[in-house]
Length: 117
Image (cartoon, rainbow, N blue to C red; front, side):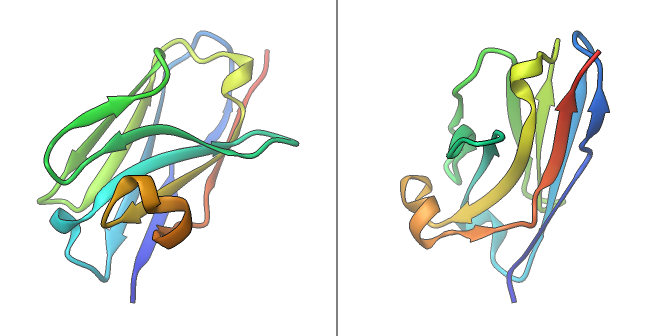
């Protein structure tokens, strides 16, 4: 049974750093592309960063960095200088192909990030 468990969210002030984590189990981790998505209030779920099984990394926003550890079966999302627009629910996704993640991938339950003074 695939399980993805996100953690690390909370209330942070603008300009602070933040690190989200996603722990994976129930599948062969190194065979999957791993991604982070954000769902802001009233908006669709958007792709934030991808760590492919090949090792290729793509961060779609300047203020975030994704990383993966195949031995620990985890991915992380590091924020530097968080902004109010980073507010949202962050979801971890595991898919055999990252571009099919929203359709065929597995989702965690999400972790809430709120950036406010």
